[in-house]
Image (cartoon, rainbow, N blue to C red; front, side, top):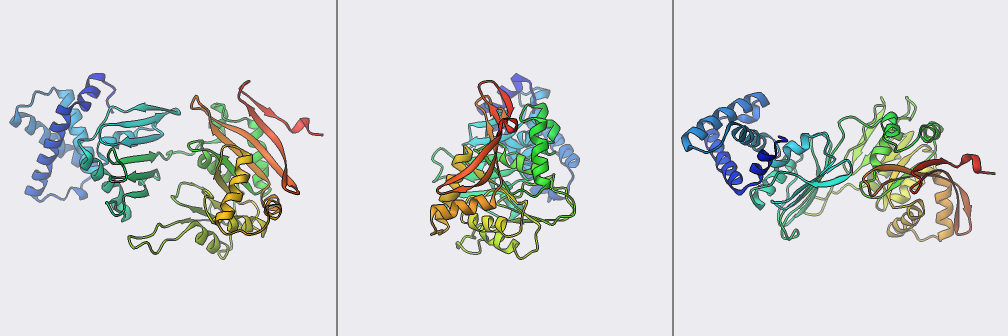
Amino acid sequence: MSSDPSIARFRLSDQYQQLKNSFHRHLIAQIEERNLDIDQWGPSQVERFVTEQMRRYVVEQRLPVNQRESEALAKDAKDELMGFGPIQSLVEDDGVNDIVVNGPNTVFVEREGRLQVAPVRFFNNAHVVRVIQRILAPIGRRVDESNPMVDARLPDGSRVNAIIPPIALDGPCISIRKFRKSALSSDDLIRSGSCTREELDYLKFRVEKRANLIVVGGTGSGKTTFLNLLSQWIPPGERILTIEDAAELRLKHEHVVRLETRPPNLEGERAVTARDLVRNALRMRPDRIIVGEVRGDEVLDMLQAMNTGHDGSMTTIHANSTRDAIHRLELLAGFAGYNGSEITFRGQVASAIQLLVQVSRLPTGERRLMSVTEIIGAKGHDLLTRELFRYDVDSKQHQDLRGSMS
């Protein structure tokens, strides 16, 4: 995307939106008139075609645009034909972590943990819906008034949620969680101050020794990113099964089986849930099971797997602290139909899980490994835990608490 402020302002103007819309219709007319199959063209061929048409269109319509403005128009027209319209340049920008479309006139991006307004907009609601349909087309999904909400993913693995009117009152909305092209390494996290070498060395040791663990964190805290890092330390030769709602984990191991849930069809049937996949995974001779996020009735099957020979399994859970994570496990178990006592359930948790790893995104946008807590047993209604590492927000220091234990 151009960093020229004048071009950014030009892109946001109503004049530009109308011009882009009319040029797009002109391109479609030319393609249909010549019976061109641009889906079979490469990017360079499409770019040449659009640039040539742009030059002719500017001359024929006597448009008052300079060269930089016409280049911007040609670039955006190409994105409309082959990409995701106004947000294509944001999808391609490695500095953007999240993209949020709130109706046709407001687009935000997250850079370095902070949301900021993006210098792009859509022509109208129909334009936003057209981009949503473009995103959904390759995976055979659709969104309409009878099915106004949908989860999907881009070809690069980025997660997408879309919701349209009448549910979305101010116009169609798109939320995209970008997928990093290269996974974060230990050195990346240490360099950014997210954690220390001692913390990562300890976690690597526990992963290699097949500790069952849960990564705990809130929205946007980096749970999946950290889970992906931990999974890289699984020794080679082990058979790993991953279960996710949208495939994000990228394991470099030789023996990995990736499973993904499936939502119900338009008739509300043929859904495949995470619980279905966890139960099936137990029959697939796994050494370790990795669940992208435990958020429903699969919690009981996940704990059972951890308790019955699948040591070294991992998952994430949405919670703001390790204490909240335990409460959330109990809540999910209740939703799953667990009828046992609290004491029994906490005993099962103590047997199944050895480590709780909490990550968080600070108000400044920085992501930190906040604590590593070991579960050492259960006593009555209480889980016995000890904190091994902690990040102190006030001093901005990572603390190793292992030496202070008696």
